[in-house]
Every structure is written in C-alpha cells, then in structure tokens.
Amino acid sequence: MTISLVELETIVRAAGQIALTYFKDLKNTAIHKKNPRDFVTAADLAVEAYLQATLTETYPQYGFWGEESGQSADQSARWVVDPIDGTHSFSRGQYFWSISVALEIDGELMAGAVYAPALDDYYTAATGRGAFKNGVAITVSNESSLADAMVATGFACLRSYLTDNNLERFGRIAQRTTGQRRFGSAAMDLCLVADGQVDAFWEQELNLYDVAAGALIVQEAGGTVTDFQGNPGVFPKQILATNGKVLAEILTLM
Image 1 (cartoon, rainbow, N blue to C red):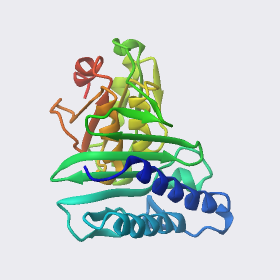
Image 2: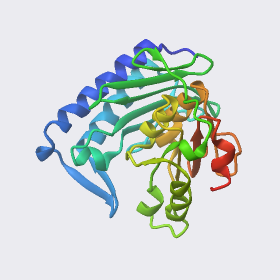
Image 3: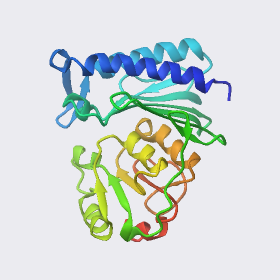
Image 4: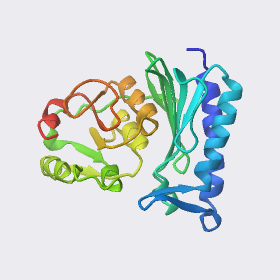
C-alpha cells in the first residue's frame, strides 16, 4: 500500500470541516430528494468534490467511486467514498453522520477511514495493521451471549420500498437481545461494532461506499463481516458484522 494514513487523516478531517460548515448553517443549506426517501444536500456535493479533487491529486494512481459523482478513471484500484453517510440525520441536525473513505485494490480493501465530524471521532484501519479510534487501538466486545447483546441495524430496504425488508428480522432479533439501536449511518454502525459499543450490526440493500471503510475497520478490530448466511466477505446487499462471539446465534435468526 502506497498511501500514508497520516496524510489520509488530514484529508478526511479537512473534508469534515467542510461538512461542519454546512451543518452549522442548515437553514441555508440546500437539501434535495434524489427519490422520495433519499436525500442529497449541498454538503454531500461539496465534500465529495473536495475528496475527489484532493485524493486524485495526491494519489493519481487510483480511480474514484463516489456516491454522488459515480465512477471515474481506473476502477481496479480506487477510492470508494460516501461523502456523508446518514444524510437524513445530517439534514435534521442530528450528530450521527459520517464521512467514509476506503481504498480498494483488485477487490481487496486495503485502508479505510470513517470520520464523524459532529462527534470528532475518527476511525481508521489498514490491512494487517489493526483498527484505531482517535489514534487509540480498538477491539470488538467480549460479549458471548446474544441474550445480553446490544445490536444495531438500519432500514435502507424500506427506503427502497422492498417487500423483502428488515422488519420481521428486526422483530426476531430484538426479542432475543437486551438492547437495540438505530443510529442512521451504516459506516458509523460498523465502527461501533469495531469499538465494542455494540455487539452486532446488520442491514440490507446498502452500497459498497456505505460499508467499505467500516467493514475493514471491523475486521481489523477482530470482528467478523459476512452475509446473512455466514459467508465471509463484504456483501452490501446483506451485511452482518459481529464481534465473532455472537455470530453463530444471530445467524439462526437472519
């Protein structure tokens, strides 16, 4: 890997400052709907434009795939970017939204960063080098009983009007766990698994840019990332991240 994690942090934190400028002035921030349940703001566009320009200038050997601008240049080695994951939360003045940046080379995630500017929490990982929050190493939780676990999920499937949605699955799992959370940013949900704040997270119908960085951070923190059948890998349409210790139990409910 030919990137500097220090340099990446500088770039992503600068993107966070751009987002915060809009966040502190939401009444004057343009908000549009891409479809009836999917939002884009001026902040999404500004942050992505900055990241695309800066990452491309700093690392011209890599292509770029952003949620708002699509794919450009070489896609075999690329940055995978969600400029604001949790745009609806952002637009309502809530704190749980994040910037997600991952480096993928030949289908393998090599580095990832998730930054929550309103909380000033910066998560990062690189393959084989562990996971960190604000420079301090993190690991998944030690909870081994699903009955005592706290889990997180999301409902992108409802935003897409899918009949195969998460409601029945959430009902099954909620009845078997002690705590359930809905934060509104898949990238952050994954980081909370990595940090041991929740023991598992799952969601349907996401895109790679939603989960790429967070999935690597979970794996480097000692957790598992699978589909709903337990197959290892990053499957945005069916992603399940756990501390590893509750994986077998939660799979029976998926």
